[in-house]
Image 1 (tube, one colour):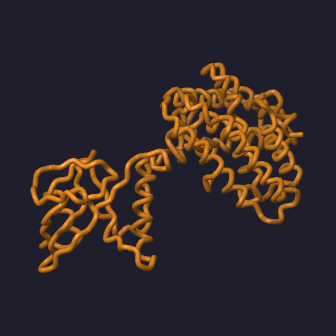
Image 2 (image 1 turned 90 degrees about the vertical axis):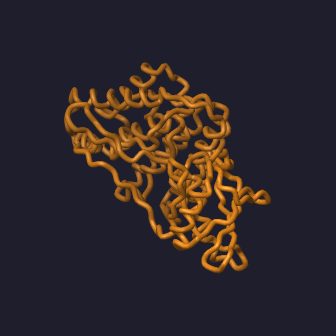
Image 3 (image 1 turned 45 degrees about the vertical axis):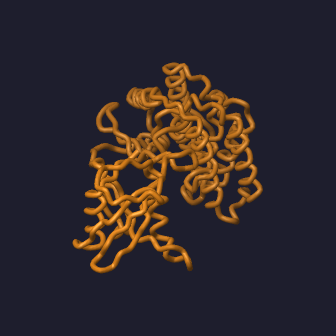
Length: 361
């Protein structure tokens, strides 16, 4: 519920329409009042405002949006909808015009965003070297060091810590699975980004992957008790190591909550990618790190069920690393191995780390 006061509304209207605005009445549509005491309205309930600007009296509707299961769970979802309304209403013939777009602060004061054109976020700076540098060193023939093992363990244990925070929300878990398939940054966005002519990667092959992933969505949708705090894009470029095993993470993506397998597959697909580039299969230091990551995570959490949820998330990450858009310099043979991995893991009832090289054949 939100509190709206005559004072707060009048101050807002004056910043938007001029200092001489006078609020004459406000309230839930059909129940407007000129009284000044605070009234309570649920977000999503439209409020009619009648105000006077000079000699002209006009009315407007203050609309908000409730949190809900149809892609409105997060404040950013609702902000997106409001910004789209303001940007688009005036371009459709006969549509009522949007006069402003704004927000409430923590004290329920209203402020305008009408002049905004693009948004930004300002992040703090942190020193460190991207974890991808460690993997590139190994791919080029570098020796597996004790620190490499320690860093892999540290990353796996970090995920066990953040994934320990759970949330019970059946609709949100289903949404996250739905986004895995249909989000523009996820599976269908990736398959749509593949060139029309891409050798063995045909439209039929990509459609087969999409359909298999959607079948997995049906299998996983009742596992809502797995909804956990996640990073959402936990790959080597988003991890900065300072000294030893001290690290910071960057750019969490697409939601605060999700399936733990998303984070694990995002990191471990990179051990597989670099090994396939170097040796054509999972081998040597990358096999050690791949198995160490999975073993550490499963042994620490006791979450063996993650093996039963990993497949579509590995498919998502496989589509990323096999993409000619994101990785233009891979050979056809490497892409074939990655697509074999995608197809075979989607066909398997459960992911088994020791069978990775079988999946790649």
